[in-house]
Image 1 (cartoon, rainbow, N blue to C red):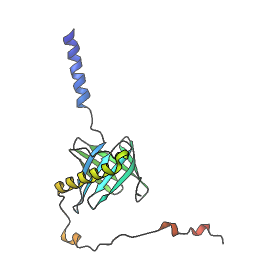
Image 2: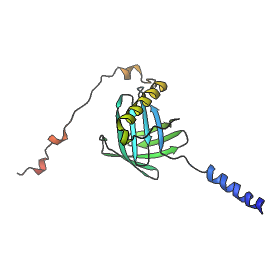
Image 3: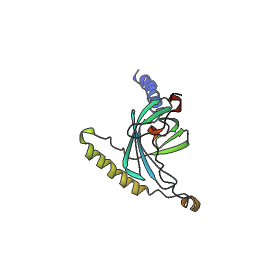
Image 4: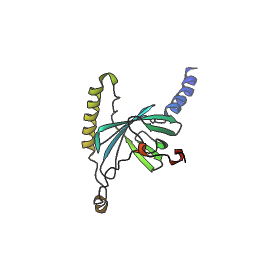
Length: 174
């Protein structure tokens, strides 16, 4: 009787573990064409993002996972269009492929987990996060893959806009 039980139990267990897909949550990184290194930590309700161009800025977004979509909105900064939908194209143990209105992009899974920010020890955990990020950024040593022509394009800088000064002409009485 025991052999029959094991005969059915072993394939069931193998099927359960073999069919388990890796989750979306975790710590990821990527190198951009211009040599910027970026890290992203995806949790169930938040996405934390930091990049080597602005390593002192830790950007946090609200995240809602719905099947193969992630709806994101900036918490401590504004996204260009308010909210964005990231479509999950593929997820493996080592790679997450996403798509949004600007195109497809890949995030590689870090071999270490980025720590959560502890609100009780805020300053210490942010310093540890930045220190770890800077070390990993140096190790990654992302190459600048732009052509010579792309590198020599003029820097357009930042365009400042103040939408509060815009007057709705329809609201002005005739």
